[in-house]
Image 1 (cartoon, rainbow, N blue to C red):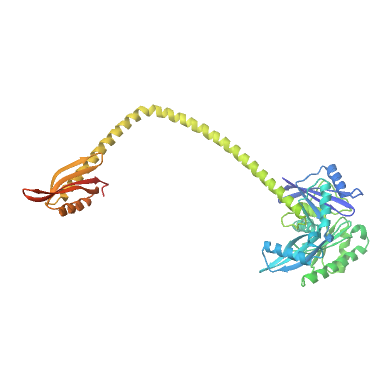
Image 2 (cartoon, rainbow, N blue to C red; image 1 turned 120 degrees about the vertical axis):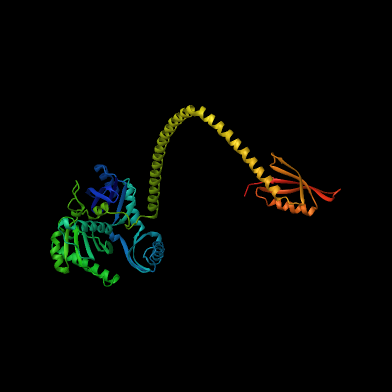
Length: 472
């Protein structure tokens, strides 16, 4: 079971959300909140974690949206690796800060052919490092730092899935989600589960109060957002508004809808997040921490410094190695058990087989002797038959001009010796060629020939060696 810890702090409040469950089905278990004192974020967070006995495997920190800048850029590529290089070049040339003083990430809004519209997000490294330092002071090692607007996106996804259960009508998209917190406000334009545009305002209910002017202030911020959207994305306009945050946002729905002339849905920020034991104080909103606690990490904007990303990758590799090691040990243990069982079975079968062999050994030995004798007799008979065929072939191939005097057989060499005489040496050579063509003769060799005189005239005496071969 996985666990996740999401930490957010504003100028006045520290909030911690805890989620547990399967990796892709995390459930919110608790949301803790307390005012920030003069001791600082790290000290307050460490005390809150100690008091609530909270721990988690994944730690996510949140950077306020107003502390980052965003630019929409169209690049001539759809490949992630090429887009990363193009974003890096753009960041070096176009950002208002030196590249070494910023942390940059991007997300793709849409792809059309070989072109991609990309939102490039940059935050000053000093801001990010302050957040990392506060988390480390509390004894936490962050896995990810992201913007508050992405927490609003994850909350909106939960709202869409649970809208019917909450009795809320589906928002027309592009929908502008206005999240009003105690000291800050997020305005996030969302369409098809993606952030199209976002703004952050460093004011919230603590500055605006609960009077009727809040709707007018929100109306002014919506107009600024629409103006910004029209500059970057001509033709894209807000079709509906979702108003959320802490308790009391429902009172602003009607006056805001009248000023905007758009459908406005007011949703309590805690409603789509389910139930958890600890209640959030009215001054705080659980939207951002709750959305990120229950959402998926894959695809989230990552504003972690390079060294934090490297550390996270290293920890992930270590976890993978540990998991692989445990798996290998389990496999080895299982293999050893199976091998022991197999060895026991084989030994038992070997004993049974030895007993059976001992019982049939005398009969088998007698049968083996008989078989060997029969094979020997069969071999001898076969050799005799083959020799007879060869001799018959030699006699049949002997022409009248050749007189055979003797045929001998040397068994060790499997050779047949042929002695005789002929009228001429040419006749002997022709006779040799005829013998080479006989079936079963591997080679025919003239051992010697001698020309002699006899009472009947000149003749050539010869001796041939025929080596037996495989019958054709």
